[in-house]
Image 1 (cartoon, one colour):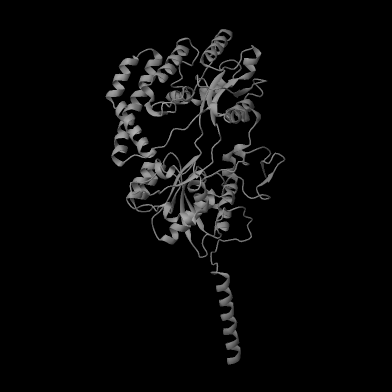
Image 2 (tube, one colour):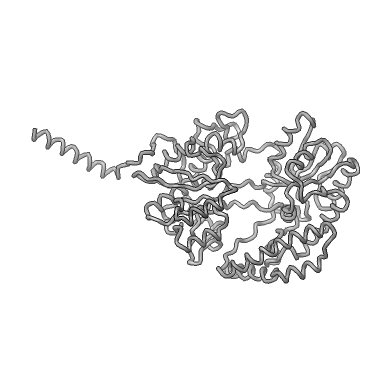
Length: 516
């Protein structure tokens, strides 16, 4: 009996030694080594070898994502029992504030209203710094530290203590996602060419009004956002300072001569009935109704997918309906450069081991394997690659929308994704959508993104106060000016009295510091 017992103990000791040589034993209950995983960018899996549950705040209208295919695979791949705290966009501010005030901060916050709020809470000790874990985050390091085009974020978003707290994503946007569109079928029918400058745009609308007196050639559903949508074509940004690339200085848009030029042009169109007189109050329903009728509206600005949606909607009522990508209206013929920086996620300040795993979870989502899982799934299970190198999703007769994949698989959940696989449905463009992307490949058609500046706490308070007053007054002035009820010179005086010149100085001072 003693010999048998000694033999068993010897076997156990050898097994223990072998396990020690092979590495720490994996005890995570959710880890599944049989799941097919692609390129993790150097991140080692599983992220934890022992049981660990982390909470992650996300935004969605789908309430069952915790039980989705995607979440099951994410847990299996990473070894982390991730549990989502799901909030709706309409109530996120209140719910998140209540959690933070009660000390119940999720391990990962997937969406914050502003960077300023995130930095403010970080300075109160709520969040861990991503820089403290940089050497353990190969995908973040490759994207933002080693890439000289992207390492500006360490200056732009650093906290007062000099550290970066937000974990940012990158490469998630289409090159152009919102655009001017025109009824090509109507333009072609009457031999009207698509415009290349403001005067040609005016002449096209004028001709359409003559041909269809009961129509409103240009319609809009974006209310007072119309000024911001049109502004990039003049090389400016409405209701805020913008960076003049030629003069290398910040200017306040709403008192700039270029802005006056744009408003004068809009005023002319409005006075001649070429723009919907209800452009400030039009609902999406009313706008959709006009845009999908045969001869009521011909030009608009919106999400590019409307081109295919409206074509399908009008298939029976308006045969030949053809809404297409259009050039910008302004003299620069430019659209705003797409912002590929995906907003910050924050990790709760707590036990360093849990902080590290939380950051590694984010780093997995930024990796090639992570963005594939998030936007396409696993090849052979949720998608196959077609002859064009794009994802063909299993279980769908046609290319699904992102919302379809959220509902079916739990993919594309807002607050989790950090980068998109460009083989996914979001980049599988119909021919008319592809025209928009091709346009942006020429640099002369792109209005560059303004530099992102870092302000001191005192500057931030002043900046926010100036912007709050100026933006409200600026929108009110623009509307009155279009309607013919306001003076430009009087507005400039009022804007400066509200701090327009002081605001611009703040921006130029901050830019000067960043340059140094």
